[in-house]
Amino acid sequence: MKEINFDELKEFLLYKRIAEWDENTLILDDFTFISIECTDWDCCAGAGGTFSDVELDAVITDIKIGDVKNINDSDTVVREIEMKIFHNQNKVVSVNAEANAGNGGYYYSVASVVLRTVSNGEMKFKLIGADRTLEGTKERVG
Image (tube, rainbow, N blue to C red; front, side, top):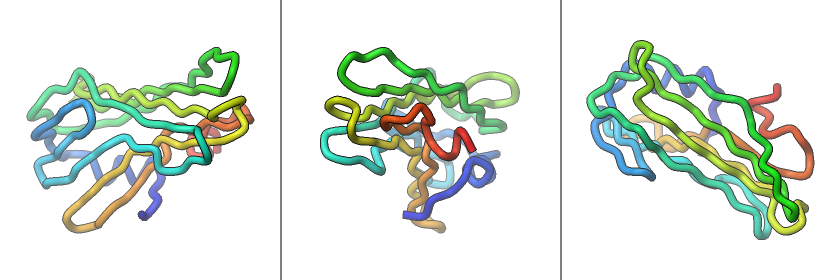
């Protein structure tokens, strides 16, 4: 699966219309399928995400990513993040993702925005990661 950066994600999604959705998938008017999936992990760590507050027929005009939130957990490292998709200045999709570092925080996981397209195949943007560090993902912290 080809890895893309945030600018490439935006370039690919801007000015496309949201045609269908459920909490696990967005389908755009060009038949692109978008999901939030655990794309990298070790052992018992996991990651994923859902879509909510979706407005159908909205044309995507901007995408913004919030700050990584470290969630208190006595056994592991858990991180959450929200990505918002906009039509003009109105939020039309909330993307909520979470990643954890498994038992004792010794492992890692990454939740990615996965695009399945007719013309470009599969692509992923790493949205949030969890491991024993406080970094989140390389994309978010440079």
